[in-house]
Length: 316
Image (cartoon, rainbow, N blue to C red):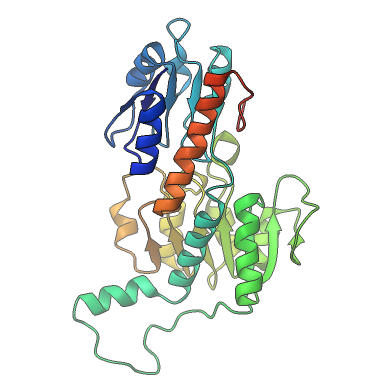
């Protein structure tokens, strides 16, 4: 089988793929729509990831050779799943293996923005620190506060556990469907705005896509309020970036922590200029063992296709 891997992989994943398939690896440049269409015509399987343009237009132009998009990552909003299905192309993802790493980065950002860590590091590195004093860089306590989780899936639950059991935080959450099985005390709230008003920290952990596009805008940030913080480890376009910048500049909210952005890798200069926001370059799963597990999970779906067995992580 001819397999196109759209990004470089860890050594373990690279060796595994090359030992079984005729595998071609691209550089770190995402596929354009035209490149995606050409790849669909030339390869049996493609392992795409965030940024690769498998929109509906990529599937136009006849029946593709490709039979599987084995997505590298849990999120697959860069793939038009319906268009793929209509073209006879299955789509899989890599759930589960990304949960803990992504929850960890959420906690990293929550602590960074609460305690003004980015601002403090900047002052220190710039040689502007004049020494300890009782009122320097006063931030927000985390222990005992209320965290609001937006999206109580695998990752949302993992974040909630860390917040409650690690920091004694009260947990409220908003989820579009009823969540009945939880292993920690948490209260589901039927309205997003009410949940945001109750939260000291709001963590966005919903899937990307049309249903969540700009779910958090000016009204939601107003509800969160001037003493609270927003954390986004989901997809950048879930948050209206212009509204967020305005909220940070004007004190509508106290701060934010972001690992994702609306137009990655573009991060607006106005956002980069603010010190009440902590910014990370999409590090959610950036641990070698996690990225290797993601690659091997994606490969498991390719092997299943090759052997004619059910795809373990089919999303369509």
